[in-house]
Image 1 (cartoon, one colour):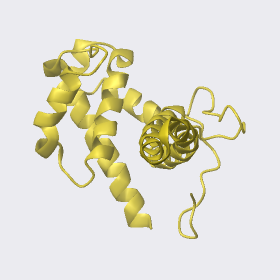
Image 2: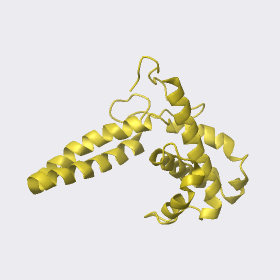
Image 3: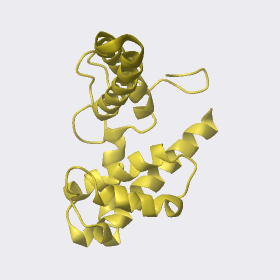
Image 4: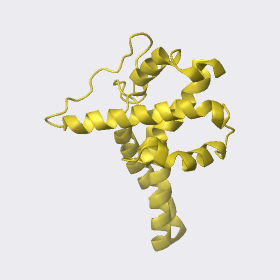
Amino acid sequence: MASMTEPKKTLDLPPTGPGNLDPISGKPGAHPIETGVGAALGGAATGFAAGILAGPIGAVAGAIIGGVAGGYAGKEAGEYIDPTSEDSYLRDEFETRDYAENGDYDTFQPVYRHGAKAESNNVGKSFAEIETGLQHDYENQPEPPPLPWEHARGALADGYDRAAEIRKNRNMKK
């Protein structure tokens, strides 16, 4: 959501490649992952709460309403990091990193995103403060991680630190 001091994002194009268009509105700036995560989390939480109060029918209605509200919340969180622009930035920086010898950019892309997601769950904390917990989460995710921890750690830290830097710069502009 744009404020008087923060201009609304109107263009979401990297230096090369297609726009990140919203599939419903056709406007630039879609955040499908963040919207989906928000919908799932919001729907589950609201559905559970409604189910406690109103039984199974309430749980279904709560999940639907919560899914919509959660999707909007997830999209709002996604506005902090423009995935299209950040992908271009990280791709350009990738070859300068020591860990690049362990795979190509496409292998590391989900690792960067995992680090950025971890930052959004640990706002205000340094990578060092959350590293042990992050390692546990990374190694125990439902799908096997694309790289072992020792190869992924640097990219996770870079994704985490980049997200923290973006958040800091955004908050300074408010």
